Length: 90
Image: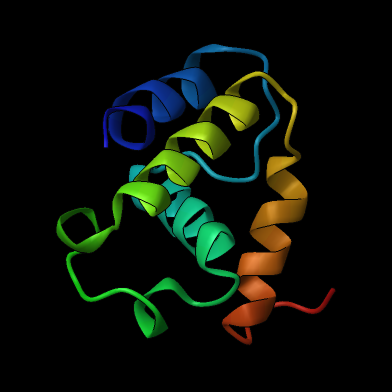
């Protein structure tokens, strides 16, 4: 939660990153969809932070760290998340 609510939105607004999202809920959507391989709420009960398994929580933190380190492409992950939701084409 700290990474998606505080760290990533702050980086998006204060650094020279050209991320496609800026809001905490967008980072959460992308990370959760990615670790679930589809729309997260089809796989995890709401609220997600209360229902993630330890393995899913670990994957989410690792993915956030990869995004922050530019080791994962947030643009690609966002496009895939939107495609799973029928809001974009890949």
